[in-house]
Length: 157
Image 1: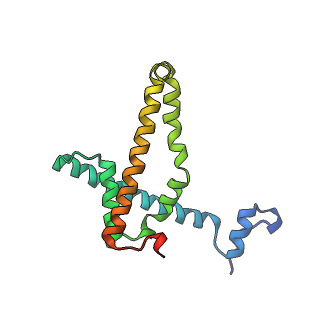
Image 2: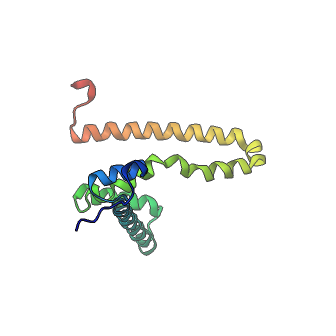
Image 3: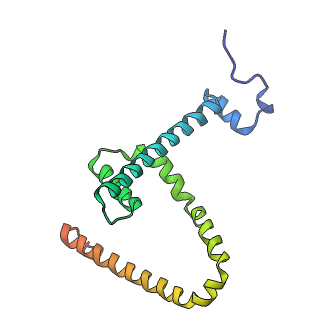
């Protein structure tokens, strides 16, 4: 006896179910597997963050725990202790939707209209100066890294 995944005729099914039934696997199973994979990646990244938070507390490192978590993730990925495939799907999703994480910040900023009106010019100047310093320091660090590693510069190729 062969069990059919769908009892309705193909023309009555939604588009995603037609594709899933043609492949021979149910849509629900594929979605559940992907959800479980992404949940596992979220647990892994959360554990890395919790380890970094514990390190900051125990060692009294004057560094934010989220920055230490990023550095720990970089070390794990570059040494091969953690494969990119173990965090790639969730990371890609988060980067693709990064702008949504700034919505609460913007709402909070708009709620502080009086503060923004009184100190807006000073805030703008400090943001421009900070961005300029960040760009210059980043450029100098990249130049030093190229010089230190002996990598050819784009103009030298």
